[in-house]
Image: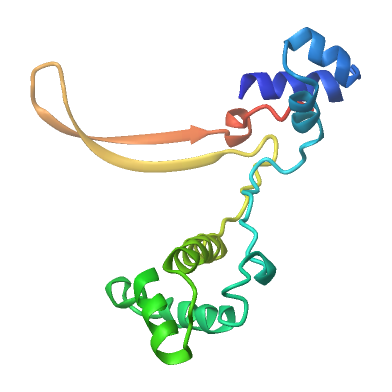
Length: 166
């Protein structure tokens, strides 16, 4: 990660060319280009679930998607497995393809559904603002007696923020 930050810094702040960065870091031009141009570092690559990538499954994909969407509301142990989806396709819809195609599609679809369910809110930490917490705790004094103490904790989240290279 330090190398990626270094590449990004050389490109954005030092205004070096990609070839010069490649010479300085020893990384290939393609690697330097990839990291210099990358904007969104948290985005995960979603698998390609387009129907034309699964020619044998193309007309069955809407049914599979429907079953998997309905499964999201069920307890985990009651959800369809790839094998159960395959058997339902064969029995109910006359699917003639292989199990491995169904398994590959279901695995990728589950990954996409999991990512869609996850969410986050970016935390904003304006400069100069602090967070305060007050509480009580038990401690032992120098004579070994148990005492109740109070603590005030102040932190400045902006100072904990990682460098963005800008």
